[in-house]
Image 1 (cartoon, rainbow, N blue to C red):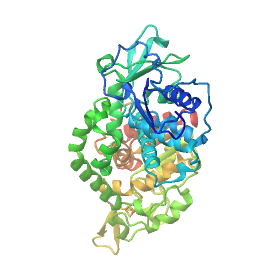
Image 2 (cartoon, protein in one colour):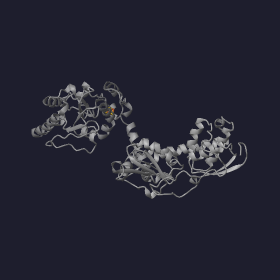
Image 3 (cartoon, rainbow, N blue to C red):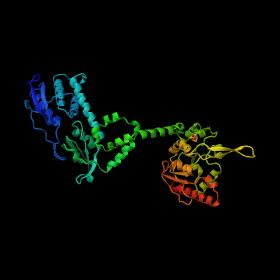
Image 4 (tube, rainbow, N blue to C red):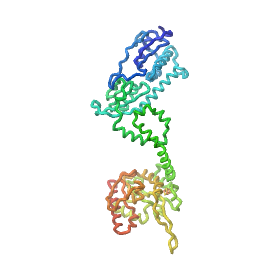
Length: 496
Ligand code: SF4
């Protein structure tokens, strides 16, 4: 039968591209590329898995062309390189139709349509490209959705083998084994699927016959960790169910431990969205919009007078910025500027500042090497008219948690630049701005404790110098002072 004849052939394949090629070459070698060939491929018909986990894959079928004659080595077909590459991908498509379309294209190319693949309107080309796209997409999903579970295996390296169950839409396990070998070279793994299983032992990838799902473990100790991670990155604001089910089709859900949480996470979306809206409302109603993110301290100081993050900006006072070098290893956080600080535009310069200076010099800490600031940058106060005298005075009024929270972006920005080794919080307001509103102050007799906070590896809490000044009895003053001294001593640590 010569090229151009209209006879047909029936050829039984073992499902591999090599076997198909063998037959095509044989047909060509005998001068016989029939217009119609019926390719029979049992592997692409729905079939039961053929063996256990480590059974060998069926050998290449010995089937020969039923009508064609010739030798596989007989004739090399000159095909465009790109077509050959595409053929490797398309040969994974799970349908016998694939061999037919590939053969029709090959035959037309061999017969002279060298630019055939450039014709996007050709029916065969379109079908071929559609299959190529489907296989590539399937491979992409496999890369994303294979989940390994650990089992004890004395024969595996380190006594552990990682096993995944995966059901690809197309016959891609052999093709994608190389991807997983490169990604997980140091662990022994097996990917089980109904068609084929791939195994890696550190030396070579082996392919065995398909398996059933019960050959794969259903959970392991890493699963809880992974699920917790997934829940933490689940963003309710980005939930698009349609896109989720398109990208992560439900058929994969049973093998993905994290998807077991999706119904609960979805049910929680309204609550979390409301929470996020509240957080963003609070952020918008805070100093955040006025803080130049990532700016150096000098720039922060310049921007501070423009802050309208809370109502204190309109209380006829000026905000007081922190002071000290950007490379300070110790930072000190107070509550808010007082009357004299507001007038001077510097933190800790009033009577409380003098107490602080004494504590610092007692501990041998040079003030100019420290960074000093307050949790709230404006002076919250009330005006009291002096009875029987002329004039008025401004009395300290403790800032609320709302003031602290609204002003926090300034402190965040300052600490982002300074990144101190040690932070000393003076008083409850400062401590609560760092450790949260439920923080309880230590007792004066407590030993200094260095905690870790988001601002510094070692964060101490002691009493505000103003509290020392206002102590009702000398004994109380002494005990507060003693606590503060011990904290400043401890804060020196290895970095002073
Ligand atoms: Fe802004 Fe803080 Fe002043 Fe409020 S106290 S206006 S948040 S700088």
